[in-house]
Image 1 (cartoon, helix red, strand yellow):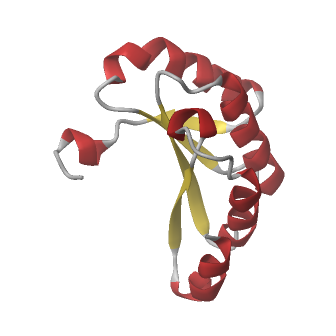
Image 2 (tube, rainbow, N blue to C red):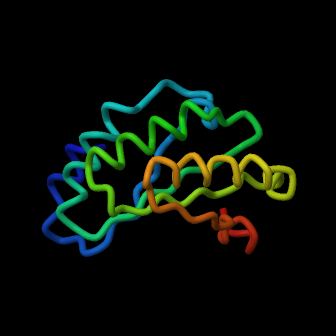
Length: 120
C-alpha cells in the first residue's frame, strides 16, 4: 500500500516491509506495488522480509533481489521459512541465500518468531 505509506512516512522511524512472493502466497504478483512502496520506504530505515515455502521459486527471490538492488543495495532481505515446514526448507533457504549473495544483496535467514510463540 504505497499510497498509505506516503501519508504516514513522516511519523515512522523503521519499516519492516513484507514482499509477497507470488509462488509463496499463490496470489497475484505485486512487484509494481513493492517497487513503489520500497522507493518511499527508503526515506527511513527499512528491511524486507519474505516468507519462503516449499513452492517458492528461485525467480521470485531473484526478482526481489533485483528490486532491492534497484532501490538501495545496502538493504537487507530477511528470508523466513514458512511454518510448519521450517526443517524441510533448510536446503532451499541456503540456495536462496546464495542467490542473494551472488547479487550482492545482504540476506539473513530468520524464523517467524511469532509463529514459534503461537502468536497469529
